[in-house]
Length: 200
Image (cartoon, rainbow, N blue to C red; front, side, top):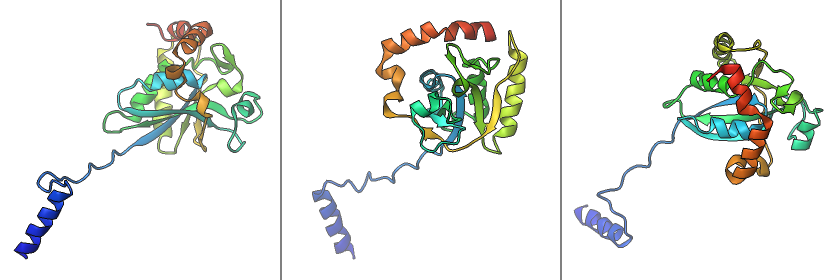
């Protein structure tokens, strides 16, 4: 037996395997997801991506009746879908309640006709929830309503449906087209309006 172990160690050495330092691979990180709509998904993807504990933010569509919708389907306002983002996060580093707290500050929840310069049903603010997420989201919405500097809360809490990822050219738009994104965001008046709604 000893000779077999020595032979195996020699074989591993020839193959470059360090048996003394070998360690099991790290366990995969447990993740959870949250889905939000807040107008232009380029902006939501950019802003939600900066939250500590967030691992990934995907632009897409949800809430409607058309399967595998295109951007044209959604902006035609015939699909019932909202421009939205799916946020994947590490629950050991942040929680759903904190994501909601940050979400409200990124949207104008007093405007149910769109968001900022983007108008129409597909741009309305909404939180899409699982049954377990609903009471947390409703409580968060009530708390956010008390902090508004102007207007009344109109954002909806809606049942989570299938999330359809957006076309490739929409993904990571703020990173890939920084100047165009900056000009769009400024011209749309998003940040100026957020100061009016929430203060500094």
